[in-house]
Length: 337
Ligand code: ATP
Ligand code: MG
Ligand code: FE
Image 1 (cartoon, rainbow, N blue to C red):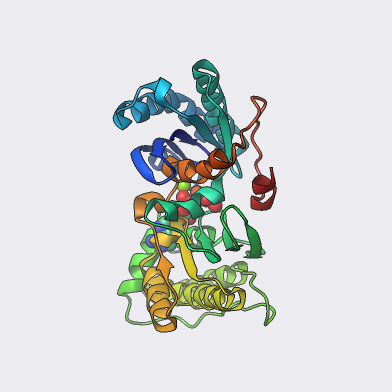
Image 2 (spheres, helix red, strand yellow):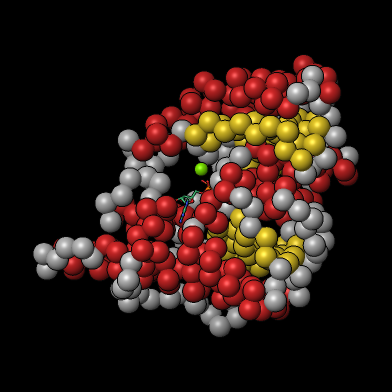
């Protein structure tokens, strides 16, 4: 089974060919970060226009690099949501056109299922498992009793982790996307500013990062008013410690209470060195098998969409040609289709 997958939900235009849901034959990614940097964040209209400019070439290259003929494809998969409506639309139109021209089935795919299934590209997923999704727009704990079954047991009530990182980075004077800058400062800093932890209700698997973000902004202002300098390192480390402590603790607790036999880390924030180390050490200590995809499969890419689409292909569940963008599609709704 050869699936051509397309991903345009945010600011990466990506196309890939994935064999049997596990083997990446090609995975091309055109990032728009340089374009959006000037605006300090992703501008939806600009994102759509950039996707239009590069999508056709990406599709051609993905098929070409995979070393197969277009007729060899088994299906065309595309992210239908969640994401920016205009950005999603570009990928959907391109995927539909190709599926129609080649007379192949179309598979609308969930972006977060893609992030989770990035783990399938590096090995078997053992069930029941728990996925910790940390990205620019999502912070979720997803329990998977079995293949294709998604149960959202925890989510952020305000900012996503990546979003909080980007806002803190901006306050510390770093360009978009600021996550990697804060990570670097945090790991290198010898001191940590005291900042709050948002545990919420004792039995809750939900997250909240807006209070922490406000505490960081207040701290930055106070240091500035006092005319101090060089406070950035301690704030970065204090912020990162607060985020990691809560995220790791809730994930481990969720693994234990659900009886999950494996923990999957995914999403762009999985690049965070502090988080990887802390989760790795804790899982080692608790004897919990942990899976973390390599960076190229953590940030937005089409290969992960091809891996998730394979689930639908195996079940023979295809999309109508009327497929349209679903900006706030839930995992449960998608898998029940
Ligand atoms: P979603 O998948 O929720 O729609 P997205 O696809 O835009 O969101 P990703 O591309 O998965 O998000 O991740 C991007 C986010 O990851 C940005 O917020 C970025 O700052 C953050 N990020 C990247 N590297 C690091 C790092 N080392 N530490 C912390 N955050 C990071
Ligand atoms: Mg992105
Ligand atoms: Fe993403």
